[in-house]
Amino acid sequence: MQLGRVARWVLGGITTVVLALIYLPLGVVFLNSISTSESLTWPPPGFTLEWWRRAMHSEGAFEALGMSVMVALAASAIALVLGTLAAMALSRHRFFGKESVNLLIVLPIALPGIVTGIALNNAFRTLMGVQLAVWTLIIAHATFCIVTVYNNAFARLNASGTRLEEASMDLGAGLFTTFRLVTFPHLKSALMAGGLLAFALSFDEIIVTTFTAGTGVTTLPLWILQNMFRPNQAPVVAVIAVILAVVSVVPLAIAQRLTAKDAEAVSR
Amino acid sequence: MTATRVSTYLAPRRRLRLAGLLTAPVLWLGLVYVVALAALLITAFWTVDAFTGQVRVEWTTENIVEVLTEALYRTVTLRTLGIAALVTVLDIIVAVPVAFFMAKIARPRMRHLLVIAMLAPLWASYLVKVYAWRALLSGNGLIEWAVAPFGGETPGYGIVGVVLTLSYLWLPYVVMPIYAGFDRVPDRLLEASADLGGRGWRTLTAVVLPMIRPAIIAGSIFAFSLSLGDYITTTIVGGSTQMLGTLVYDNVGSANNLPLAAAISLIPIGIILVYLAAVRRTGALRSL
Image (cartoon, rainbow over all chains, first blue to last red; front, side, top):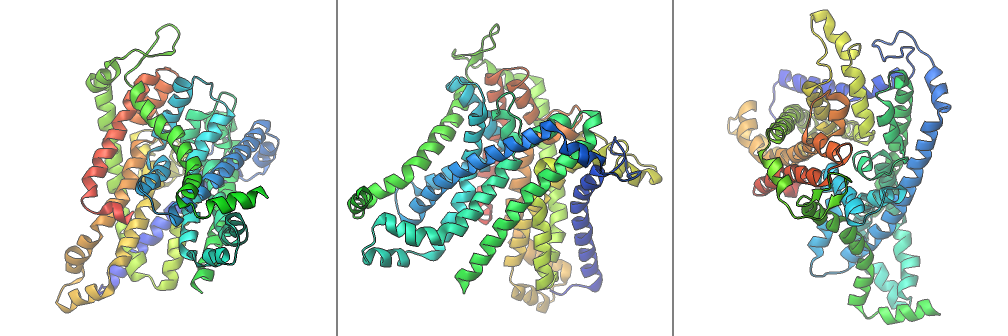
């Protein structure tokens, strides 16, 4: 496009500044976690690993970490089963109401978290008359995690087509044998990516969590929220925040690699 | 073997196989989610026992009337709408030049890096980002330190803090669809416009902007609807600012009035449905 030199430089400058501003707050959290200031004063007066040491001995934070991992694993497991089933139904069959099923799967993350949260809270407490607990939280997380597994599996099934499966059936393999020996191996990395995304989504979720976790059920984000307003806890919260950020990024990065590699393989 | 027998039985029966695949996910989503949403609507017409705090099945339009007539809800709805609109506009103003640079000026290699740099922060925890802004906005935080030499002071915890934080949170969601929109504008069109004598600015307003309008609207849906339902950000950096989300949360938690909370939550649901219906005609939903 015909653009003056100045315009190009200005646009480039804006982009650079915006990107810097996007990363700045995350960097500040990290620096606060090693700052000697207890009240997160900027600039940090000095650096220390004291808060990291203290965080490593924080029982509450570790229990919360364990709870988060447990909930995320359970929710991803349920999402993996349901998401795969739905993806196989929608990619291999044509039927009335297909669009509605698709909408149904997307809805839990399309609506604002607070709507999902209060709807489930109300369903558990008023409709079913049960106390919120760990399992209510797992059900809630699984519900909005289905879509990530579904999306990955559906894309893969659509890209790979049905020819291999048909060949397998023609050669006399039954439905289950075909799934085990043809469909599943093809689907494996997509399911892995979808499962990791589901894990990260659940691990990091806070809004639906506040509405569906029972008393005493503290996930890592809930722990941060509860401790954030305590003045003397500030630097330890920063440490846990850094850990939360890293733990939720790693599975996503792996998932990204998995999908990118297979996209290459498919296009080859 | 049983598995073989089941397989032989199912193989020619397509419908049955489909039913087998669909039953579990549809039952789950239907029972857990659709029923919950429907129940939310119904609960808004119920009431709470003043003594026990339990929800009582007694049909009343009390909650709806209260939400519609009391000044508090009108004020908070308008404030929430204002914040969501401001966040959306701010994000679009920042996103358009950045997306344009990424799609049309940066070289392919650089473009690839920029897309990754823009997407990566989406992965970092939402809560951590809000927490980061709490530190930035604090009285002895980075913003105060940066503007104090010029006689300024940090906006602190309040509406300005909420708007800044929400704009920060949703910016990548707005940049990406607009970037995709710019990417879909063929360079040939820009060259044609230039050949016909259109200067940079003219090309931008007469050729490019009309073409990327659906993309801008698609981006606005994210910023708008995510802001509308947010309450964590308000709690952390909003000071005493009340938004619809905080009202809902207070009524579920401390006030323990689920029917009223359900009635309040119908406001953002209604606004989003109206907004989606309004933008449907522009074709923006397809470019999500």
